[in-house]
Length: 222
Image (cartoon, rainbow, N blue to C red; front, side, top):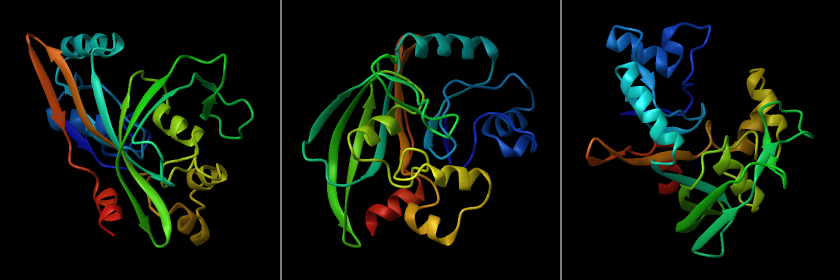
C-alpha cells in the first residue's frame, strides 16, 4: 500500500519514470511487473494498492470490478451540510456542455452512481462555512464523489473542475493560474483523501489506511 501524495499522477507520462506513481513503483521494484490495483485522480491523496506481480494485480482487479472492495474517503466541502447522513443516488455521464473534455455530470441517462456521506464536523474558517465528511462510494464512476458533492451544492474545496468556475482547470493545465485563481481555490490541491480500503483476500479481511494529506490536516486545524 502507498499513501499517494496530492499532485502526483498515477499513470505514466512523457516526463520520465519519477513523474508518475506507477513509474516510481517500477523503479523501486526493479522490474516492469508492478501494477497499481486502484487509481486516484492527480489531486486526490491516499490509499493506492500495489501488486508486485501481474497475476496478483489481475485477481485484485477482478475483485474491485465485482464491487468486492469497500472504500472510505475524507472530503472538506464548501458550506454546512444540514443532515448528518446523506445518500446521493444520481446517475453520471459525460458533460456535453462543458469546455473541459474530461468533465462528467449528473444526467438521467447516465450510469448508476451512489455515494453515502457522514458529517464528521461542521466548522467556520475565515468567516466561511465548511463541512468535513466521511464519504463511502457504493459505485466506482469517474469523478463520482466530486460530481455528487457539487451536484448537492457542496463542492470540494479546491476542486478546479467541479467547483465554482471550471475555467480554473483550463488555467491550471496551461500553467496559467493567477494569484486571484489561487486565492479562489484556497488550497493547491482539492481536499479529497482516500482514507481506507478494505477487501477480502485469500481467506482474510485486509484493511489499509492512510494518514491525511498535510494540506487537509492544516485546513482542519486552522
